[in-house]
Every structure is written in structure tokens, then in C-alpha cells.
Image (tube, rainbow, N blue to C red; front, side):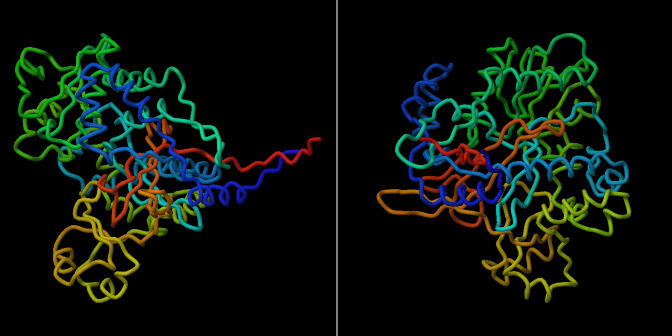
Length: 436
């Protein structure tokens, strides 16, 4: 007989995250995969040598019920973001470029969660979440454990996983009304050759090339706009895969790209409107405000799911200085338009000087949700690393999930043993059939 119990999976996942010290990643296999890529030697150097904490050797165990709950929270958020009343509210404080409404959806939304004793809690949404292709790479280079209780199935990515990603970009192109095939992509970031995620840019370039799409990696300053065409040197660019953190395309170096985008001469994904609707931290104050949710007609069940599944977030108001300071140990402060961990602070680590700067800036304060932990053996020592979970989402559908391991206040890719890690789902069922 098979018994289903969500607490069974949760308890076993917690136990495995503490007791399993197996090395899930096969480094030799990873190197071989990279060697088979164009620029393979450079990728090996960048991923395996220069960035030793980009990827973790360990897997992270997550209960099946927790994965299901994350999917439910994501679906609830997507349903609210689709409401005209919600969009009207968030676009009222969005930058000018977000008022333009393209037809493309926006690739690689990242829904980031912490796991506490009450289940998963969303801490933020990112509109150009990195790491999806790094994690696809990791999924092909793992060793099954054969000597400890963690003998669970690693996620088996379908053989068409790459085709799914390519289909996403081609769909963005078609959504903009183009009938001819997507033929060229520019992967754009500020000074991409100096970016920590450069190896992923190269992996994307290789992926696009394998599927017959010409791809370049460039700084936005390398682009020109003439004859209503965005160009890189003599190549006309069909689509920009946007990895910039100037989400509104406001900085001087983005003005050529901004003009081409606002003139509807180029497909940009993800785009300013996507960031405004999903990733502006101020949006979380609305998604955790029961009065606002009632006013825009959110269903009671969805409202309950949001209030329980998203870390409570409020706008930082200088008039509430004393109350915020007194409550700071239970809060996490984030810049409203920020990304990643830049200028984000745990309240219990704040100095008065930094707190006064936060009061004068555009910040939100979020209820601190302590991350769960993964114990590893590093140099024969047991070390506790914090973890968060990221779901890569396109048009409301989860494409893949990963974990990130770290020490310190936030994810940093600077922690021995840390980095992107594969997720192994622990089932909530057990076969109790007696065997003889």
C-alpha cells in the first residue's frame, strides 16, 4: 500500500539536507560537457577555475508538497498581475519606458523562495533571472548516490529541454507579429566580458548558434539604429536578450536600444514593462496588502494564498523611523528598484548611519523569512549553508527550478561549497507493502 503524507516528504527533505554529504556533481563529466562546447577551454577555465563558487557539488532536497505550494503561489501571483486594476496601480509609479506595451511576454522570470517551518515564502521576483542554462548544464553532470539514504531520482530533463528554451525565444519573436524566422539575437549587458555570468552568456550564444540563430554578446554601446533597424556592426538584430540591470533603459548608454524598443523596431525580452509588472519590489507591498487585494476583486482563496505565501512587505516611510528601527531585527530592507542583493540589508546588521540612508532612499521593508539550511562537509568540517529556491517561469509555467547555497546576508557566489545547486524532490509517499 502507498501512503501519502506531505509531512513525510518535508521531514525527510530536512533530514537529507542535514545528513547527506554526497557529492552530486560529477566534475569530470561537467568538464567533458564544457569541452564539447565551442570555446570549451575558455568555459572550463571560467566555470571550473575562475568561478569556483558558481556551482555547488551538493544537491538540495525539497519536499514534493513544497514544490507544489510554490507552484500554487506563482499561479496566484500571475492571476493577480493579469488584472487591469493591478496593472493600473503599479504602472502609476513605473518609469516612462514601462508605459509602452510590447506583445512579447518576457523570458526567465525568477520567483525566489525561502523555506521556513510554515512552508515556502516568496521573497522576490526577478525579471531577468540568471542561471537557467547553468542549471541545465548541471542536470546533465550528476552522480546518483549509492551508499546513503538519499537514493532519490535526480530530475530528468527532457531530451527537448534545449528546444523548449529556443521555442520560448522564437515565441517572443512571433508574439511581436513577425512571420519570418528569428535569425539573429544580441545578448546584451553592460561590459559583458567583465560580468560574473559571462560563461552563461557564452552558453546561450552556443545554444542559439546550434539552432541556426546568429548570436552576439555585446555592450549596448556597440549597437546602432538606422533605417529603423537595430544593428551590431553590419548584422541586423531581430531580438535582444536583455541581461541589463538598468531595467527601464534609462542610463545614457542604453538610449539607442531604448529608442529602437520604443519605436517597436526591435523585440526586447525581458523588457521594461515586464520588470514594472513583476519585479519592482514595491509590487510586493500590494500583493501582501489585504485591503488592496479586496479592492481589486481578488478571490478570497487566492488572497489567503498570497498573504501566507509571500513575505509581508511595506514601503519604508521616514515618518515611521522609530517603529522601523525597533522592529529592524525582524525585517529585511531592499531598494525598491534594486536587483539581487545589491544594497540590501538584514535589519539586525544595520548601523544607524545605513538606516538613515535607507530612510532617505526608495526602500521596502520585508518580514525576515529565515532561509532553510543545507549541511555540507568542507575540508572534513561540517558547514551549514543557507539556501533559497528559484523557479524559472515563462507565461505562468515553471520551466525549471534550482537552489542557491551561500553564507552571509544574501546569495553571493563567494561561499566555499556554495553556488547554484540541483534540486532533488522528495516524494510525499512511501510504499508500505510488506515484502517477503
